[in-house]
Length: 262
Image 1 (cartoon, one colour):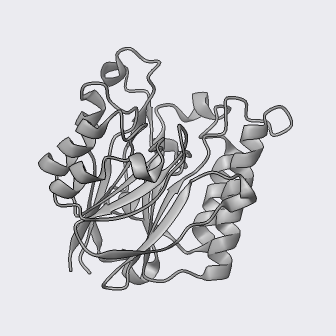
Image 2: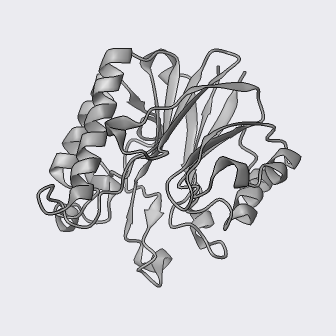
Image 3: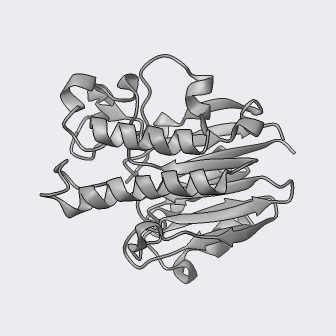
C-alpha cells in the first residue's frame, strides 16, 4: 500500500481551512499531519476535509494553542498521545494504519527567544521535551513507524540560511541540535528528507518578520519526516512545497512530503 504523507504546521486550522483544502485538492497526499491547529477537535472543520476524501482522523486539540491532527484517506486507528514533561499541551498524537505502520505526529515547543533555561522557562521546557522524546524512543524501541512534525529544530548547517549567524538563535543552538540528535539516535530514526536530498540548503520555514521572504530566503528546516530503519528504505520522493509559503494569508511553514512503498 504505497502512500504519500505530508506534514505541515498550519498555524490555525480554522483560519487556514481553505489552504488545507487547497493542499488536499492540488497535491492530494494520502495522509496529512497538521501541527499548531489552535482548535478544540470538535471545532476543526472536519466535514470540509471529509468531503475532500479524508474520512479518517486522529487528533488532540487545544483552544487557541498547539494541537495536532492526522487526516487520512486510508483507515487508521488512534493509539494514543503523550503529554511529554506534563505540560498539559496537545503536542503529540499517534495512529496506526491497517498495514501496521504507526504514525507519530509531533509539535515540539518553539522555545521562546532566549536560548538560556535560567532566563527563559520556555527554552528549558523545549530541551526537556526533546529529552523526553529521547527517553520514550529508547524505552519503546519503535518499529515500522514514521515520525513527522514541526520539531522546531534545524539540525544541520545546510538546514539554515547561515550556520554561523544562527548558532545563538533558538532552533539552531548546539544544545538543541545535540538534544534532537540524541532523540533521533535513541529511536534509530532515519531522516527521510535528507536520505532523499542529502546535500544542499533546504528550508521549510520562513519568518513572518521578513516582508520579502522569498527573495531574502532566510529559511530554516524545522519540519521533519523520520522513519524507523525497518521501513526507511521504502521512503522516497521527498520534497518541500515552497510555493505554499506564498499562498494568500499563509502559514510561515511549508508542507513537507515523502512517499512510502509499503
